[in-house]
Length: 131
Image (cartoon, rainbow, N blue to C red; front, top):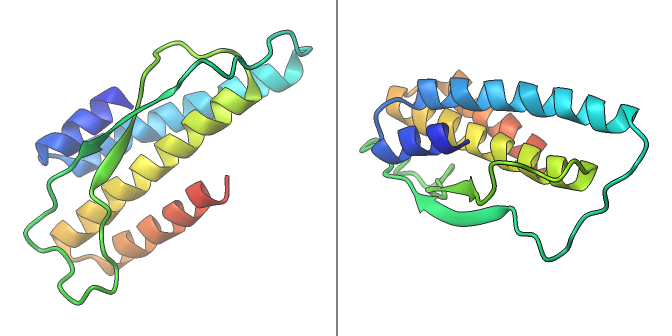
């Protein structure tokens, strides 16, 4: 997530940021499988924070001027590199990575003007919202 957010903040390569997030999402899916296959041993500590500050992202100059599909130009960051092995913590990180992936696709779609990328971003935003 950190590398992807940095790439998005630099405004240089949204596709590469998306690739980093895709790798992280795949790793989280494996982590889910591991957690579900083990007996519950660790409980969530409500005092532990996972979500960090929002990272402002520069939008491409071609931002949708019609206002039909506006950008919330902030990526979500994480405070911890190591997570408690709980399903709740993994779900939160998974949702953050999905949201950041959607933001990458959204910005790339605006930059390139590809409708298919914008539609994919909308689907990914909805998937993250559903978690």
